[in-house]
Length: 200
Image 1 (cartoon, rainbow, N blue to C red):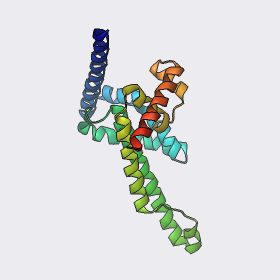
Image 2 (cartoon, rainbow, N blue to C red):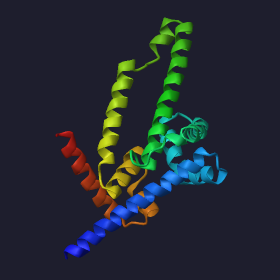
Image 3 (cartoon, rainbow, N blue to C red):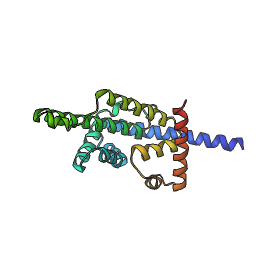
Image 4 (cartoon, helix red, strand yellow):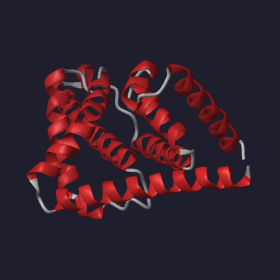
C-alpha cells in the first residue's frame, strides 16, 4: 500500500518537473527569437489571451490588437521567465492582465482629456477610478494569484482557466481530456481551499 502511494507521488512530481523543464526550454527558444517556438507559444495561449482581452475591451479589433501586443511583450520578456516561480499559463495571464489594464488606463486618460477640452458637462460624463483603486485592485489580484499558485496542479489549472480565462467547465474538460465531473470536483475543492486561506 505504502509503495503504491509513494510511487504515485513521485510520478506526479516527475510530471510537474517535466512540465517545468518543457516550459523553460520553450521560453528560452522564444527569447532567442526562434520562429517555431513563438508559433508554439501562440498556439498554446493565443485563444486564452484573446478571451481575456475580448472580455475587457469594447471591440473585437481592439482585442485582436491587444493579443498581438501581449505576445510582443511576452517575447521581449521571455528571458525573465522562471518556471520555479510560476506556471507558464499563470505568467502569460499576468502579462495579459497587466497589458489590458494599461491599455484601458490609456484609453480612459484619452477620454478624460477629451472631456476636459469639451467642457465640464462632457467631463462629468466620464467616470474614472482613482489611482489608489487601481493599485488596490492590482495588489488584491496578485495576492489571489499567489494563493491559486499554491493549489494542486489540476485545481490551479481549472481555477485559472474558469475565472481568469473565461472558459466553461466543459471547455476545460475537453482541453484537458478529463470528465466534466472531475473538473467540477477540482473546482469545488479549489474554492474550499481558497476560502480557507482567505480566512487564515
